[in-house]
Length: 144
Image 1 (tube, helix red, strand yellow):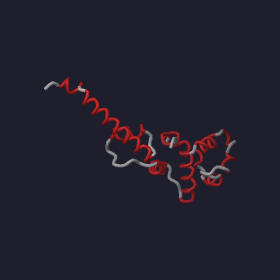
Image 2 (cartoon, rainbow, N blue to C red):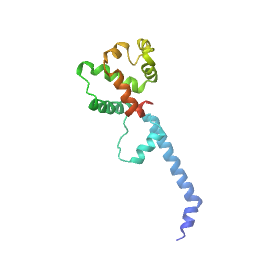
Image 3 (spheres, one colour):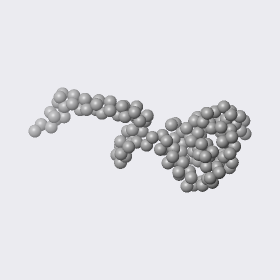
Image 4 (cartoon, rainbow, N blue to C red):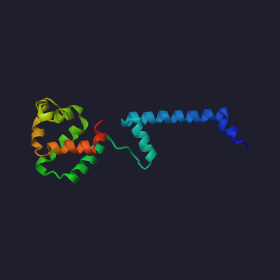
């Protein structure tokens, strides 16, 4: 059998091209449905062990659990610290406000919907811990 003919035949090239196009269309549909970038989808498919894709909230919850393992939070501060963690991770405006030198932009927290000034004040000693943890370990989630 002449393998060069099989590899170079016009029919086979059209078949492989149509298969690749169908796969690309399906991947785009999955990306739109799951709100994933094509790079994330390609990475997940290359690993091959995932049955489903983690959604944004699932990723944040798993990162929050990792944070809790390293920095235990007492019950009184749990809700405000968790809100700070999620807001700092997902909201660019919150990161800019909190990272401003000497807290000069903290007054803007009165008007932000994702984190209130009262919640930020209730975080007590975690106001520096949460941003540092996100910068060090959860930076990949900041574009969610």
